[in-house]
Length: 236
Image 1 (tube, rainbow, N blue to C red):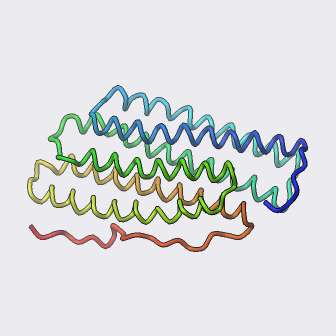
Image 2: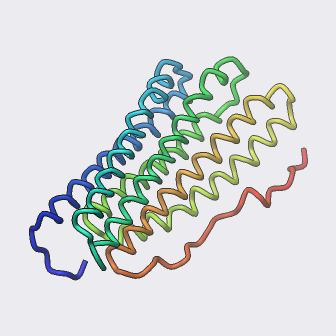
Image 3: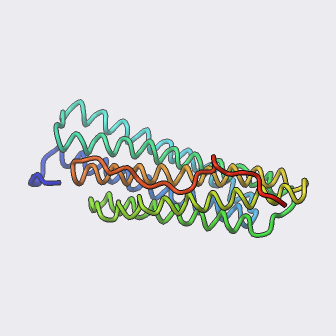
């Protein structure tokens, strides 16, 4: 930000909120990676750990919101400072939703352990989740440094997540058409792929908040990849 920094009570409070968001983001990043690992290895205990851990993420969001309300009430920030406060509050909500998607992925693991294995499916979803996890890590780094350039790089990578989701949808539909016994597993995989895509969207929103805070103007409309809404049934 352009304003000179003076170490005030407001600065201390705002730094606490920002650090809380960064900590929460680390917890969410871990949840994504653990859920994807549980999916690939069919590890129900690890999946249960992710589901249980979502409560910690929910509590973190509640604590951040409480800090923000207190900050607004006591410090009454304006202009640039208000922009930062609003941005981190929005980011906390988006992180909580990403955590919910990771939990949803983990909750599907017990079902998928009882259906036929779709070769390469879980590994492909784990690669998709790793891509989003790296985006999240870089988004948090951009917040820590208010690095608009890194935030823009995160935004640009969302198109890769969209394209990967589109390709996975086609693959899973093909598996279902080739053998009806694959339908249950592939439907769950489709839901997971779509959830990971939504994680990418939410991470991108967070990066756009960083750009807004750092530069004072909204990020430009981002380029989207191929939409799953345009998928047609492949011919066998």
